[in-house]
Length: 190
Ligand code: OFO
Image (cartoon, rainbow, N blue to C red; front, side):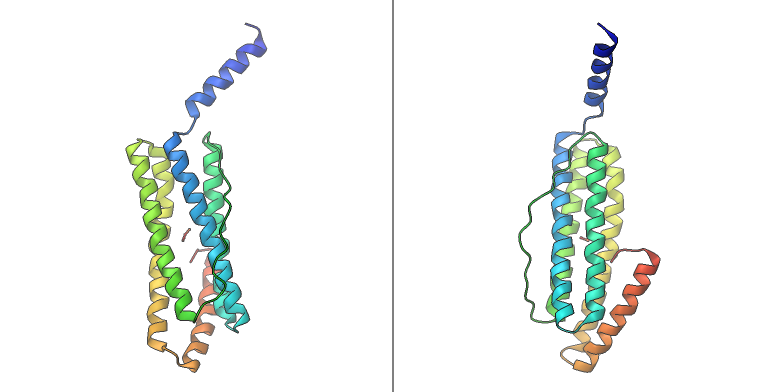
């Protein structure tokens, strides 16, 4: 065997050894879709808030949408670096209309609860497939979801207290602007 052929055999062997488990790869690609859907959904919510005069809420949601895209990219790089192939999904158009701020944050909260269930299912696949490296990588998402669900629940609680009081909603929107600036400053996701 010449040097070139030997190198190619070594390369193929290394590739085979480092190849990602197919079930784990599928679970991660499914999660890439979920993160992309989150980013799109929050972007659509941000647009609604912006055109309805809730600039603080819009800023919060635009930032949240960007965060979700970063969550997606983190998975994309992980899959590609670990010998798999990230699949960039086609997405459905998210809703354009919402009844109120309350409806937006209820939808956001429910969405995050669903995302947590999806993440738990990826973690479950990692354990079943004994892929402890990916299991370890996924712990970042597990912690992130705890924070995101808590934040969404706190915001919803405030909105429930405010009800349809216009002055209350104005202050809520202004407060969310400050929350957003603090999150941006701390580099932390919503
Ligand atoms: Fe990706 O953190 Fe929420 O969905």
